[in-house]
Length: 280
Ligand SMILES: [Fe+2]
Image 1 (tube, helix red, strand yellow):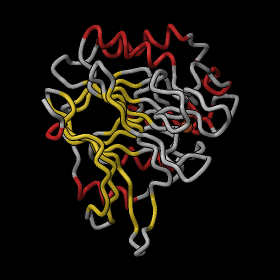
Image 2 (cartoon, rainbow, N blue to C red):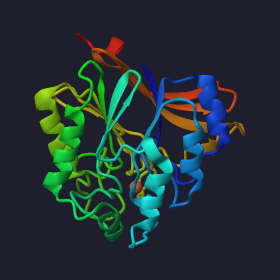
Image 3 (tube, rainbow, N blue to C red):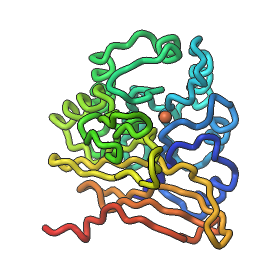
Image 4 (tube, rainbow, N blue to C red):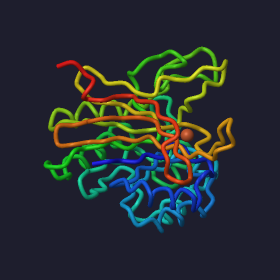
């Protein structure tokens, strides 16, 4: 199955994305959060899509509203699309949502998240993800959808979850997600973890972060945060970014970053993984 993944939107989602998805016809769309700063427009648009969608909200979706009401409104506006701490079983894939509203950095619940979601401990957060995975159809490939990625994937600024906006560089991944991945994999394979938050373009210098890793257990980690995802190339062609993944019953087939023209033509591609190119 083909999964289109929208990285951090930061307001960049409109009907041109809907038209493009109709042309591209992926089997499902995953959205990693930071839709906007709490505006209702994008959740309403995502609800209009006819293809299956799973979404996790990010730290920006709280709009820094300490009452938690903005985050709660975003969750309610997304309705069944939002899979935070839960299972969203789509045709051909089971999506497990990680902790909503995460800003990374190990384990920290902002005032907005505490107000909207309650004072959830790290252990409770892990248990919720593990329980969601246990409820998933064992015949389906499992994908973990998070806003911030897991800890343990490197501590340099350019690592997939590295802190680049403040010295010293460090691992800015989430501990609860790491523990959940470990526990889920004791029960069943986990071929893919998808997230965003740490933008590809680093804050210091004209460098790009590593956005794809496979660990020794065979789980692939994809950071989809290509920001801005609406852009124009040097020839004046409007582009839309999606990360693009193919999964089958044996796991990951391919992964790439893709930039499409509005006519559905693939203009640029960065291949991240292809099973056909991996030596046996
Ligand atoms: Fe974020």
